[in-house]
Image (cartoon, rainbow, N blue to C red; front, side, top):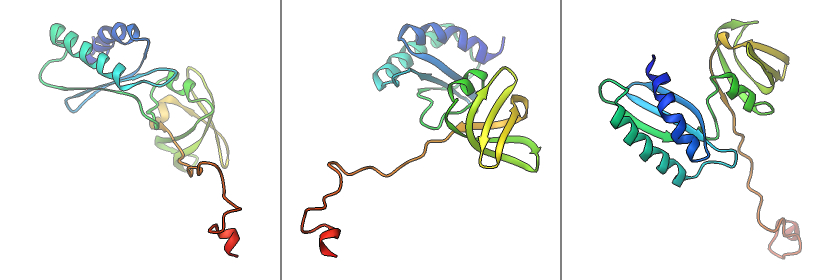
Length: 167
């Protein structure tokens, strides 16, 4: 059994016990990264609780040979997309995708996920619709677009120091 599969088997009950979802597990370069989420967002107290329980359980069962660093966190605003479930959760969101090889002259695609199934994902891009098989995708993530923060109370048109009053 692969390290990630063994860790997933051990960690899933811990994460579920807190009411959270196990979003993903990555193991590369000596770092074991466990990404957890919740439909209402995941708080730092939940992440600490999951991290402590996971650390104790991994120390007891020792499923990973050698040294490693454990990281438990939220997938963040710009989430990695690797599984069918990730793409299904991203329907309606903007994403960036990089493919292994060129498809219709491009390796990078940006658009909104309109559908996902067992074989791939359908994007709505500025140039139309694009279907990509999961086997063609080397890297993908959601895109968070920062917007201006509205000023509290809205514009102040009646104030003598406002721009409108000075013109």
